[in-house]
Amino acid sequence: MRRVLQSAAVALALALAGAADAGPDQDYMLYCMGCHGSEARGVPGKIPPLTGSLARFMSTPDGRDYVLRVPGAANSALSDAQLAAVLNWLAMRYSAAEERPPAPFTAEEVARVRRTPLANVK
Image (cartoon, rainbow, N blue to C red; front, side, top):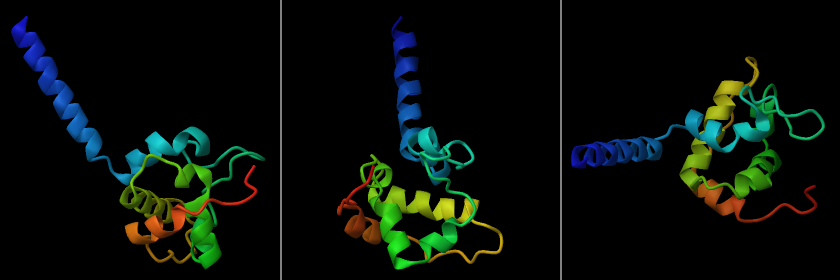
């Protein structure tokens, strides 16, 4: 019995260590996919898609501020660095082929902007 408990403790520790090292694709799956879907298409009329013109949107100052301040991003359990990594991954993964990638988000930018809530979000 003792050996079983030790094995279970080791397995749990390894699983938790792996979760702490999740990459942006895994963070998207855990924190974003529930609303935006596995292919980031959203829900028509309810949840915006992240595909197509995301890089163009993230390339404007207002667009950058917006994506950092929407409730799902601003209030997520992701750290500032993790959220920056997810947004950078999304920009590379789901932007249209002809779009130029936006400047990468940094943890500092995320920390500065995400704390200011959006007004009139339904």
